[in-house]
Image 1 (cartoon, chains in turn orange, brown):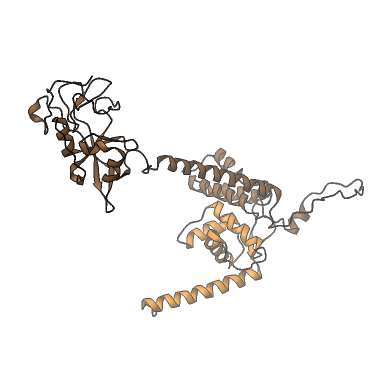
Image 2: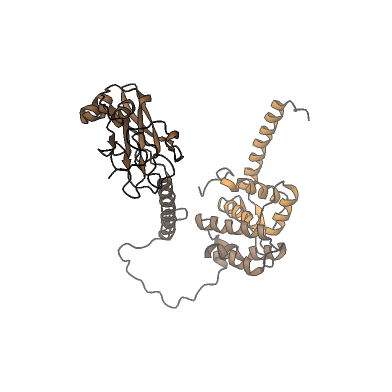
Length: 109
Length: 284
């Protein structure tokens, strides 16, 4: 599991992990910045424990990496593998959205 | 509502040591900015549990390199002993994690046993005792066992704690006449519960001289159909169970069908059956 580069099989941390990847997509951020960012754009807020549980998993999979500490805070950035995983995941979600909308008859919306 | 810092400190101890070495400082920085509430505390506790259950922290090389090293004074080559302990590969179960998991498994088994035992204790036991059905045998088999049943004498059924009464024959018997009825229908059979409705003593068998039941404890007296007579403190007649004859002709006492005996209205005129002896006589 240590070599798995996808965000699947993250169990209940799959969604927070995805939110973190999205949050880091534009610029590196430290923990608190990720949290406020995610809680601003996502429907369900994530708590500090969930945030770090997901962060640790992403880090072990090599999807994100820590940068040098600033003060006591440590920013994280996407790795190449991380941005690949994010874009493939988003592509899959896009496909899902298209199928869902087509079946609902709201494809043009 | 913000949680007190002391509570935050306690919850952070839920995380394993290695986790705190790696993430402790930045998490503290986050919490300093965030002013965690009780919900965050719960979330942290769950995170700590998660971190203890999964080995998530692999110290990255750059962090390891940044750690202060102890000065090595002298390196003595030590011969490797048998069963040398290798560095635990990440992702495999360490002895400590194994022991911890076994502790969890043990606790789970204990909880399971407790719950299972409680359920087993509360489960109704319908194969014995009050509430069960007791097959007795066909009427012919009962008469083969006790010929006097055809003549109206009660047949004691131990497991159902009952007297089975052949009602038409029993009436003749109590009136002092001789009768032999070998084929009573289900409606002509009566199962009297032998527990005295006064205080629960076991009612003894029919007495010879009166063909009545008299409880040995306080003398409550019943006629051959279990109706309360003059004597004794019981407030009602003997209680009854359902009786049926199934497809194979077997008499079954159904103790889940329970009927209270008729109230003692203290006058002979309220009885459904009046035997030969005076109303106020008791056995013995």
